[in-house]
Structures are given as structure tokens and as C-alpha cells.
Length: 293
Image (tube, rainbow, N blue to C red):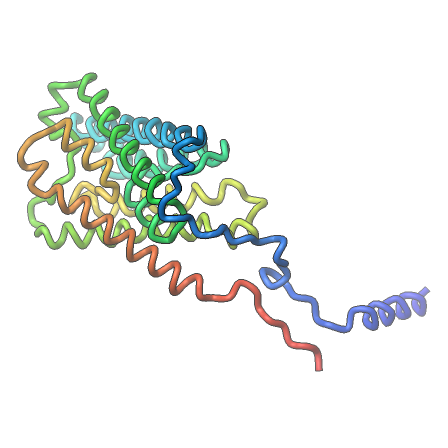
């Protein structure tokens, strides 16, 4: 019996003379397909129902996102004792948790999009993941959804809403506009870089057995950025969120710093797109294996 086992081992060793690749090196071209770059303009999209379907989904997702999160902000602000409310941690969880839930729901339905954020859309456009036509449409629908979501919150609690500054973003006392701009740039960089990494086709090929993986780190990134930057700017990192709150609140100090919440996120998104495409994606997916001596 022992001799037959030794013969099997020798037979296997002669049959497979090369060292077999492991991990990502074992993946073949069939496991990973790079999507072709999106054209700058794609007029044919305007005739496709999937184009409008994705835009409607962006509107609804951003509406729900702003409704839940701004309502949470109002609840914390209305509480006389912060210990009796969810506090800053709860606000951060509401933003991160809603992103996780909404992105997961949209990905489960194989909907294109699920950005819920003009900065994310802008970053993906720079990386040629979607056309300019689709990017502009998404951003418009996201902003409309945000305005409607905050408007519903104000309808529920108009008095407290105005007294609590409507969840609008502005640079808090003790910080300069430069501080606020830097916080928005870095915070958005973290978010958009996470989006690129979590949705990368190479990662999807490797982690296809974990469909929940992409929305989880994205939502967690939103949570962490909010924990860090709520004391500075109230955390924008999403121009639609900032625009919706500013329009419904509509007070001068909400508009004084509003440019920060567009310029900062767009710069952060552009830097994340460049970093991911030029630096990270330059690392080869397959590794070469040396033959046994």
C-alpha cells in the first residue's frame, strides 16, 4: 500500500513539473474583464429606458438618504441632553448606514449608478466609467432628490428645523475656510478612493463570492469621515447633500461657505480618481511565477 502511494506521488510530480500559481496569480483572463472606457458623449443612452431607470433610482436613493440623515441631525440637535440622543456617533452611523443600505439595494438590482453623490459621479466620470451625458443626468437627479428629501424633513418640523439651522453645512467657529476646504478634500478623497477600490473589476473577480463586500467599506468610509469632520464643517463630502440643505434652509450663512462643499469634494474626487488609475492600477494583476530549478 505504501509503495502504491509513493508511485502516485511520483506520477503527480512528473505530470505537474511547474509550480502552480496561487491567489490572484491563479486567475485567468476569463476571471477578469476590464470594461471598455465610456465615450465622452453617448446620444444613444437618451433612447434607453435603463438610462432613465438609473436616474430615477439616483433620485429616490438621494431622497431617502437626505430624509433619514437630516432627520437624525434634527433629532440630535433638538435633544437637550446629548447623552439622551444618539450624538455625533449616531449621526455618523446614519450617514454611513444609509449609504451602505442604499448602495447594496441598488447593486442587488444590477442598477447602474448607486452613486448618491455628485463627487462620486464626477470621480467615476474622470476615470471614464460613465459618459458625460450620464454623469450630468445623475448629478441633476441627485440634487433634486436631496432638495426633496430635506424639504420633507422641514415639512415635518418646520419650527425646529429653522432653529436647528436645517442641517446645513458651514465652517464652524474656530476653523478657517482653508480648514474646511482641506477637510472636504481629504474626506472626499477617502470616500471616492474607497469607491474605486471596492468596485474595481479586479477585486470583483477575486471576491465574487462576497457580494456584500462593496457597499460595506463604502458605508464605513462615510461613517469614519463623518466622525472626523462633523466638528469642522458638519461634513459635506456630498455636494447634493449640501445643496439640498442650503436651498431649504436658505439663510445667508448657509450660502457664505457653500462653494467649499462643491470645490472641496470635486478636488478630492479628482485626486482619488488620478491616484487610483495612475498609481494603484499600475500594479500588475497577475504575478509571474518562476520555474523550479
